[in-house]
Structures are given as structure tokens and as C-alpha cells.
Length: 113
Image 1 (tube, one colour):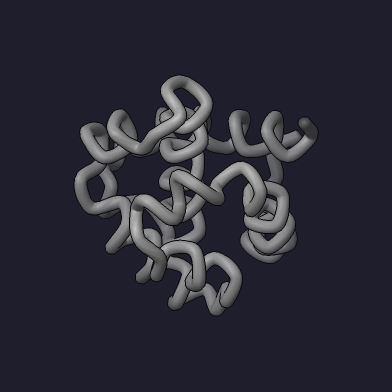
Image 2: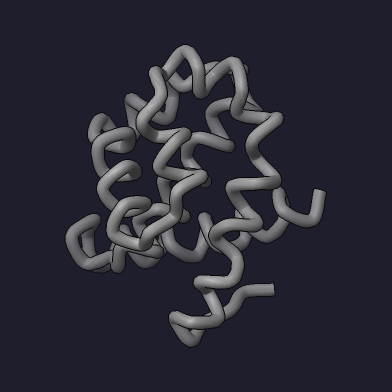
């Protein structure tokens, strides 16, 4: 539950920032967190990725690129998988994804509690 709260707070903040600066104005870390937030929202609402893909058609490609740029092997593995695999395994991987991301927020000099 703590990871869900953390991701939701970050996701909402980054979503607001994206509306001001556009997707291209986000850092790789912000972009990746935003994509995971979109996926999480979609999966929790409907159990699939339809809403996330409608909102952001490039989320898989961009998520994979951002995870590679940030050297996050666990997240790379997820984004290199099929959409069906992500739908089937998202909730079991969710905490690991958040744990891999959380230390980076301190390196980036920002934190949302």
C-alpha cells in the first residue's frame, strides 16, 4: 500500500508538470514514473492496459528507453515483455518496480512523501 501511495503522489505531480511542459519536458525519471503511474491507474481501474495505452500510445517504447537510460534492469525486463505479460504480472511485480525506482528520487534531488 505504501508503494501505491508513493506512486500515486508522484504520478499526479508529474502529470500536472507534463500538462505544463509536455512529455518532452520531463526527465527520464519523471517520464518513467509517469508511465508506471498510468499503467497502475489503468490496471487498478479495469485490470488491463487499455486506458493507459489510449492516454499514452508510446508508453511501452518510452518506458523501455527510460529504464535503459536509468540502468534499471528489473524495469527493463518488464517493459521488454509483451503487454499481455505485463497485464498478467503487473501486480506481482509492482512493489519490486517501486523499490527499484525509489532510490533514484533522492539522487534526482526531489522527494514526494
